[in-house]
Length: 138
Image 1 (cartoon, rainbow, N blue to C red):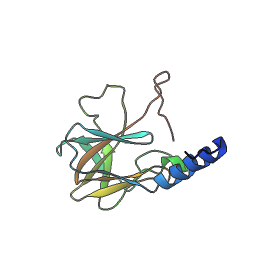
Image 2 (image 1 turned 60 degrees about the horizontal axis):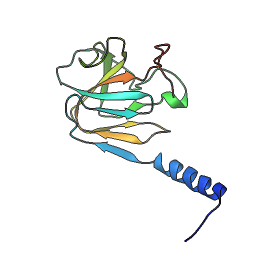
Image 3 (image 1 turned 120 degrees about the vertical axis):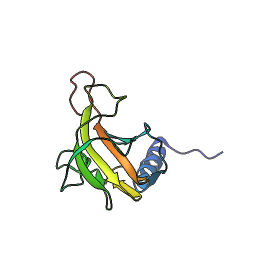
Image 4 (image 1 turned 135 degrees about the vertical axis):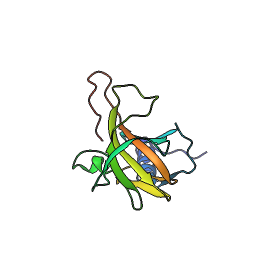
């Protein structure tokens, strides 16, 4: 049996974590009501007639300028103002944009695995701190 030191084990775990950032999570054919998380955002598959607001000129899904806020819905996806949380969400859910695409697309991020989604409509919500009800930020 091979044994390694604690520092060698930590180094191997860190290398593995760095390599996993490059991974893509394939979430094709998500059913309505299913959710996938990428860091501090939740991506909800919603009905295609889900109410959305005005189209956005920006495909960033989290507010901010930090590296952690760089959740991007890549082309051909289009982002719209989020106006309504999915029906199963609590009324205090922090709402993000609504994303629509007729084709498969990727939600990219420099620190998390990219998420590959099928064409459809997705409502973004933000993770929140249960004590303060503030949005959690990556």
